[in-house]
Length: 521
Image 1 (spheres, rainbow, N blue to C red):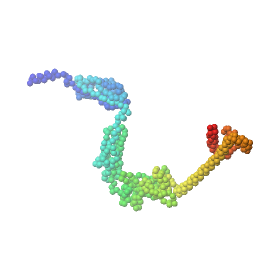
Image 2 (cartoon, helix red, strand yellow):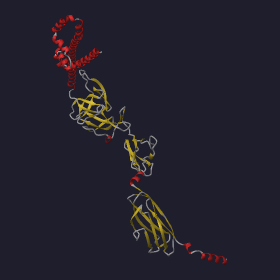
Image 3 (tube, helix red, strand yellow):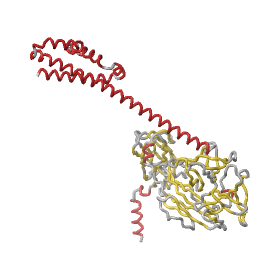
Image 4 (cartoon, rainbow, N blue to C red):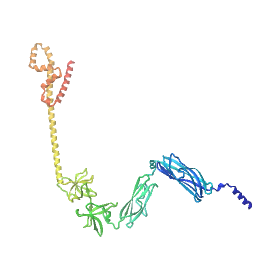
């Protein structure tokens, strides 16, 4: 036993002193990414489970990516030296700030260290490093997620319709009248997105519409709509029209009307009334929760037709059935304005123009108006009868003017035709005369050779018409032929239509050239 104790003591004394040295760590913490131009805050912490004595270490970084702007180190830089003032010091931290210089990935690390515990024993240290990704603002935004979908949408204790699908954006739900609130749950599909519109919601009787908006990290958003209908207690249903609205807060305002209360059956219902128009209105709600006013006969508890207004920039009217006048030539019809059928006249069916009748809500006077179904607007039509007569007069004037213009056109064509015929007749006469004179010129030499004994007689014949023969024989150029034509052609015709004469001359000249060629051959 003594030998065993001696052996253990010897082994312990032979062990190195450092086996039982204290240990610690040097850690670096900061954001993992940085926008170029912004500041990165870095914290360096020395910690140990044992009391610290003294320390000295350096921090290394790439100055092409980061520029040191401040440091809590005594040196003001990245060299850290310190001493513990008491045995209770077990950690020490320093803060540094860097400005990002360019895009890329860089590393911040402990380059060297020498740490001692409070008993001046060398400490075993584990040192860490930190990688930082730098990028421009454009690069950062490009890396953002654009996922703005919901992962799930639900209402506690109820099933929505249809079943949730992230690509479907409208849902509905109906609850009993005694349900005054519900809790809407909305889970975003991407962790970087944000959601608004979920949570506990109060319910009014009737339709309650809620919007759940999901905004992606990139800034785009999607809106999911949830319509929750709280059933009314003993609803008053009007067949083919809807359910009477029994809360005045749900009734929209209408000009020239004031709030009123009516008794329908045994229940009071809110509505509107106008003494000047002599009308009472109640609101009816359809299955989708849309409220429409109807004319109400409170004496007979009867809901009548829809109340509608047609408005232009200056006036508003309440349309009613037009008093048909059989003396007018407009075709009668029935048109639908905002869901109400009223009688009207067709002014121009293709362009959607009609004549309607109604009461001006400002002057309270009844009258005719032109209604455009295309633009759902009106203009005054003060005197329909006078307008109808004026329209007929305009039609007659147009027909008469058209007839007069047609007659003048026919007369002008006839006159031009007569002129052309006169010119053509004179030209034919001249052409015949020239042909005859040419024949005389060609036959003269032959007669002189064959009948020499009759030479004197031929001369006498020539003398009987000396001017015509001489003129034909002396025709040597165009000017002389012009003189001949001038003597034989009616000058008044040429003055009226020089174009016809030029046509004749060109034609005549071509014929003469052809005859000369024939003669030479």
